[in-house]
Image (cartoon, rainbow, N blue to C red; front, side):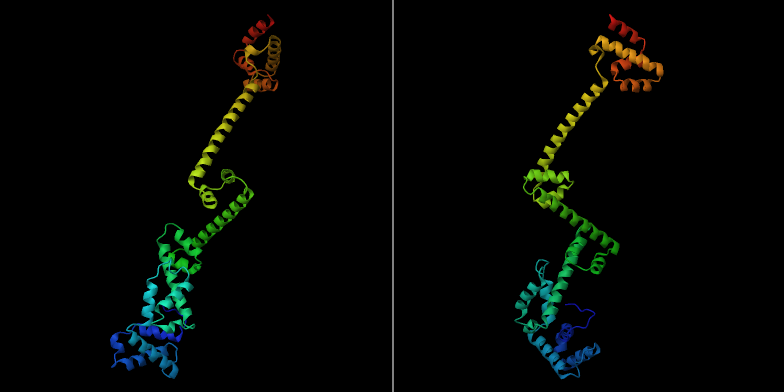
Length: 320
């Protein structure tokens, strides 16, 4: 049990002095001098012991108890607390009750309601130390997250983890965003509560939820995720294939029929139209644009801009 900067209860201040005593200090020949020395030290710390009969008697009883038990109360208490694991101190109040049941036979005075808060405080301090030790051994920001999640105050986190206030604020902001995302996903799942597992996963993917969060919040395995992804990939490929086919159809439609498919009357009409257009411009791109606007087949336009003399031949053939 460690000292703090605030004035401790008198019983605890006495026990801290007794903790440092050796067997020679409490031998018959040294006992009275030791008691007077401790009383004087406590007086110097602001406790009225030497001139207060009741307090001095309390000190004598505490030293006598240490002599009869062969060990100090705090030494015994600290040894038990030092053996705790993080799991042991998950609930400081419950573990304090168990602890006092364990050593209360030797130290029944620790069961006094006035002393229990100090024991709980010691257990909580032990828990904090174990949490910090665990946090320091974790990768990245996981240790900082652990301490934040356990409600450790910011000053303790920054000092124990040797980070800046800015870093702590950054991690807290990240956690805040993650919580907001979980809230969003909860809302999304409510919208598809009556759907199948596959449909829910698809819906979350469509709403840009990460795989990791889907697994966590839906409690599904990676196999379920991979199955949906594979199905979605196949559907996407099919959609892409159909889109490409449609684009090709529209392209061909825009280009118009091939030369072989143009009737004689249409051929004559298209060639006359091309000649009129070419009277306005001899720039290929302009010719192509005007021909496209006039729905003239691309096969004829290609001939017009590359070998316009061939139009006469095509026209002659069309006229028989």
